[in-house]
Length: 153
Length: 234
Image (cartoon, rainbow over all chains, first blue to last red; front, side):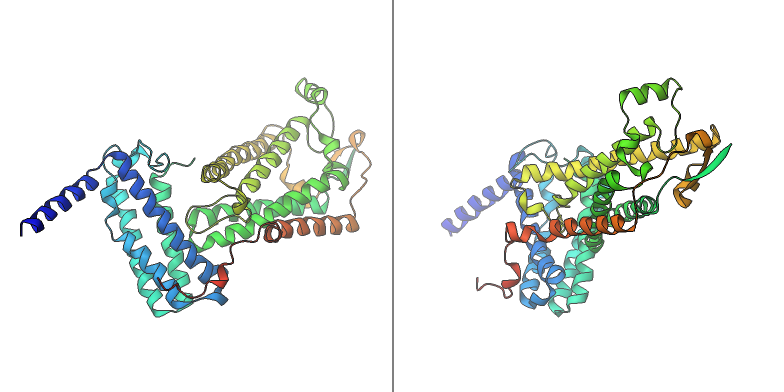
């Protein structure tokens, strides 16, 4: 019992530390999340758009599920105050306007989540054309955020 | 005494208007994003082809299409600014704008070839760029080059309006019909151009565009993605 409690306390502390962690950590986590997203969108693009002859339902569904999982993980938590300034794996490209445009940000972020969940749903059916269409819609929602709150280098 | 001359040859006019359409289409597809980005890439290929065409045509096209005919040298610019320049075709100041437009479009296409939208679209030469930092820089330059283009186009259109309203000279009609009525004293012999040269230039430009898109596969075989068809076991 005591060990369990101790473990719970340690876990809770560790988690809280990660949550409220230093700015750099939040930036690093979110950059990693988007890199991982990029790997998975890349896989879908290759099989669904560029080389449809290589389409494998399970391969694409796995990638779509990964995207939905990241989208549903609560990325918003990684956008703490001050995280527009700082360096994770590299300098953050978050615009300071992020913190003034809460409503628009929420809207584009929700669009992304909805599109990601829908993609996972259609990926499960294995219909390449529907997947392609939904994949396009998902990319539009990525662009929604990029245009709104991401610095162009 | 006035005379009507063949000012802009057919290939030049075709280049001009196709370029207008292509740039507008490239802008629209980039703004909407999504699956249209693949069309953005195809239109980029067309623009690269048009630019290459113009570059060659600037040496072997008809007289007024040639760079040497209107290159804005300092004496020409000076003569124009002090009101002592007489001629037809691009005036020295307009020629400056022409070269600026061509240079900026080259930057736009060149960076586009190596750019990425960080979503699911990359230019054909993206993989030749080694570091993420440089890739981001190039994509940023692509956006900057477009903003410069907007400025140059605004200058282009307002100059045309200025000529129309203040100087009472319509510059759009000659770009459509190729013909312009000018004082006889300014008429020059029109040389160069021709169907064979036109056809050859189109062929050469097309071949270069094709090589840019497909040649990279020979230099640097891209990850054999299509081979991975099934998910790995873990």
